[in-house]
Image 1 (tube, rainbow, N blue to C red):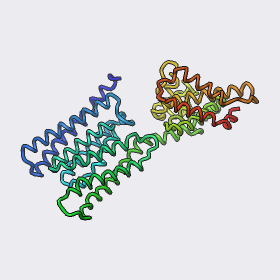
Image 2 (cartoon, helix red, strand yellow):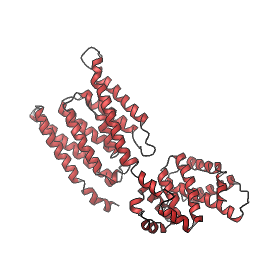
Image 3 (spheres, one colour):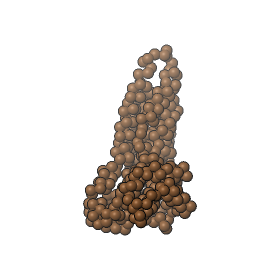
Image 4 (tube, one colour):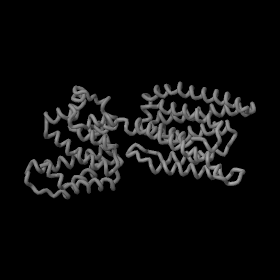
Length: 398
């Protein structure tokens, strides 16, 4: 794995070098405009370059070790584009009042397109650039606290993308910090005019933050929405052909998919990927061939999460199951197979579903094949209860 990632890691150097040059040159030019003393200007340039270099090294290490959040490891230059935007904001803030710095956006943007630690480090280095240019240090603590709080709130958004409460709390934190560090420390009588710039910053930061989150949702959270709509459509060529060639196997897949969807909703898992795996897992090795023949090439059309579940399911006898979604697929298949097998032997048999489900789950737990999948005992029991609640649905398996 390290061998495969070494070359892509070297490809990050041009972007890192470009940011270093822009940072150093920008500090030198704008520091001259601000008429900074020569020693302070030189020190500011050196510290800007060093800070950006540390940020680049930290990001590259996170990339090489696979520690980036979401799919950022597959699109590393998005981070450097955000760094370029952040650097422009940092230089602009050197000429703005401290109360008007839009660093809430910078912290959240950089964290979303890398990971929490990298985003925090990068944004703080940029914040130091603004503080150096402006000659004002009070903004450091103000925006560091706001940024750290917001980055923590907005961590891990890919499941249901609910950002209303984090957004409200972030803006509220910005208001409190601005009031404590700008309004109350002003050498003037408390006046509504003191709140004008902080209020404007809240509005602007809120608008920019919503725009950033919209962009993030389209590029990360819902990037495979169109693909899932195509491959999970039961009338697409692959599933239509599967249904015609072997209706019995196809119905097994449909029933398994039904349970996978229900469990994914209850355990807050990747429902789209699990639904896709439920429809296609019974095709086995024929899936690649059928998908390519019918315009659904696995590597291009099937999202990575769905491919990983299918691959892990196929290799479950040789490798331990790691993904929770794969474990859910295995459980759903086991129940559907057991109930269908009962009805195939005797369609009129009265099955004790509670006893059957208990036996299946005890076997799965004692078998040890799901020990590393990350599903807790509590989640297993919740799945178990769901299967017991679906007694009416089992009539469709007769």
